[in-house]
Length: 254
Length: 245
Image 1: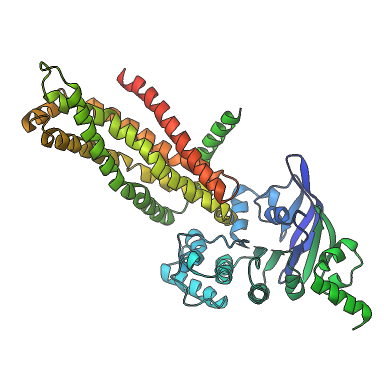
Image 2 (image 1 turned 90 degrees about the horizontal axis):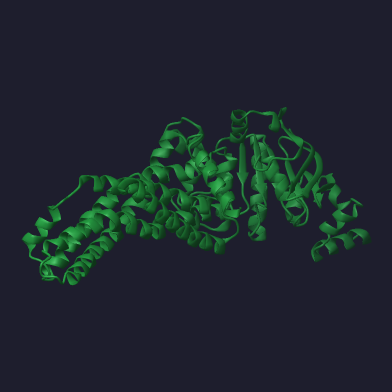
């Protein structure tokens, strides 16, 4: 479990996160949603240890990050996997080398063992016959799969995804969402996804945290989000015409 | 104050580069790759430039030696001294600030823009060491490039001087060996080592700490070239004062 208690973070005197308290559970896909500028990315980067909070704490399965020594923090980071918005694959490496990279850095496995593991995870994300291609030679959806494969290759305990389906067509986006959900359940990891895509919310939102202006405005799951009376949440959820029509149909009882 | 802040961050960056080393086997491969990119990839242009600079120095010297009392062998002597003391170590380094420096800044800057550096940090890797240390080690080979540039420069002077009809071959070879002070080579290579370190670290600094998008990568490359050149020229003056005065 990741436990966030009264998290505050600001830049240049401006407070971005204003006391967030929540928990993320193992084996579930936890979504952080909110409009642009609500503090989602800052929150995610605090969870990753890239930003140091000014106040509050983040506890990973009983270990408070800020109380850990440098070595222990590094060990904890090795248990984290991250899928970046733009995939962040290393341009100069092939797909296979990208996925193998964390194994080369953190394990003492033989190359044959590493390759076996790489091929296993690439098969798991349904990516075959692209091992020798460079990231620039594959599609956006395939890049996301490679990023997911790289994130899970060391069997991390925590998986963080920053808008994993941005820039993808709706069909591919759903495939990526479902892949993340399957992997979360299969590997029993804590997955935290930063998104503003309502399709993702409907597809995989087992726990949803809604941020507004750096405050935790609402939390619940994908069924509760469509029933809440919270004005900020309903404004966000029903901002698109499609969801407005769904809402109207719900009200009319169609 | 702005420059002081940057200078402070540069030295903090150097501290970060030499702490928490990357795994040896990974580092070895990175160093070989950097040697290929930064050193081997620079040989062609270096030889080309040095050859023609040497030629031009010989022609200029010959055309300015109008007094018949002055021996022709001075053409070789002046060419040798110019190439060894300044043209090969300093002039080539300024050119390399453009070639190698902009390559380093743009490659690291692009990694910053595309979150690849964040990816390294999230994995718990010391990105400063992973990205910059192999470049510093690779640039330790830079004196070999300058040695080749010295040879090419003097060869260029010979070709231009002898085949241009300015000086007989025997006079040129005599002048080339005359009053040779081995310490001048030591001085040139001390300078080269320091320039190599600057060539690896100043562009890395501009790439690593850049903010923004693709346009800023271009701006950072230009800025890296300007600052590397400025620092090379200033340190050249200081080193010459210290080592030759």
